[in-house]
Image (cartoon, rainbow, N blue to C red; front, side, top):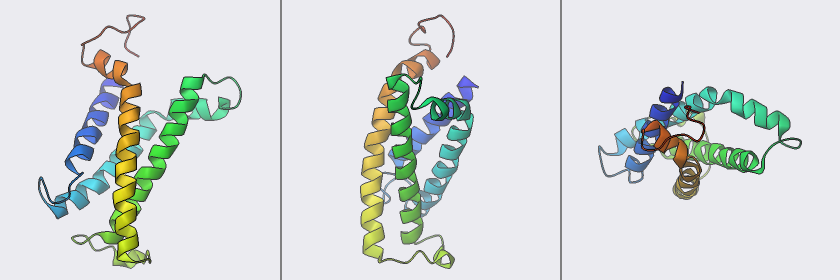
Amino acid sequence: MNISKFFLSLIITIAMLLLMDPRSFYGLAFHEWAGLVIGIFFILHKILNWGWIKKVTVGFFRKCPGRARFNYILDVMLLAGITLMILSGIAIARTIDFSWLNLGGSRMFWRVMHTSSSFITLALFGIHLGLHWNWVLVRLHLKKSKNGKEN
């Protein structure tokens, strides 16, 4: 399971970096489709970590360590950011027709929302990655885990 989580996280990280400029890499169509795929991968990532999410949600105001609370709040902010990125991306999409969704609002509003939520989410994603850096190093066999096991 940990190896699946690792590769899923790696794919999301690489894709997020490649998508920061819609005109680079493979162009706007790739940017739009890959953005939707990242959304699906993010949901899959949450499903794979559902046990932790449930445990922290139940114990958030009781017996939850401060680091777990911080990670939980960060994850909620990441969920909000990715949701805003996807919704705003759908609203301004040019190569995929989402007009049937009738999201309303001006194109400029959605463009600003997309750009700002992307930059904020990228910063939050960097913090998330930094907090899990030891886990990454253990998966890459660049560091031994504290208890000698894979966590």
